[in-house]
Image (cartoon, rainbow, N blue to C red; front, side):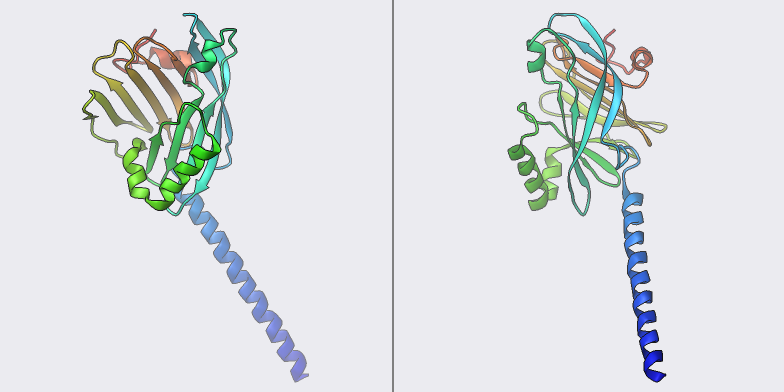
Length: 237
């Protein structure tokens, strides 16, 4: 009888320990979910369909629904590294495939910040992806110095670099608007606009240069977005 009671106690102890471990694991996972950035895409979202507008190499407009592919590369203690890749427009002009529209860039998503690193023109090759991952692993602070902050709760100051490029995040209610442009807009000067909204990810995106080469826009209700005065130099239409 005593042996039977001891066995019963042992089973009870094992069950209690199992419940504790499972509860701790659940708490960890919940804590990880709570730490996710409110402005980035939900963790389970791998593709998002947008309305798209392209200005083609043939100097014509193209409206087309397009997919944005959201790929998690690596998770780190302070953030998660993603790539964003845009579906290409259906165009008969082969030069359109050569324009730098497809690879949106690397995004390092921390609790309070979203950092952006442009992709190489050859895309997300294994070598490039591994290089970026190793940069984060070996010296995260140095990696972040190479990036631009494209989203944060309190916004950032308008900083102009030695080449005349402005880069800053503006606060507008639940929106965080990243602006990147040069005072000298014409020629080949690059411009970029990213509008982030809580729980939605990017809701409007513009990228191109002063000659309107490789110009691309995508977002939700994009024709309405184009009427919003985002200021110089984003008023294209």
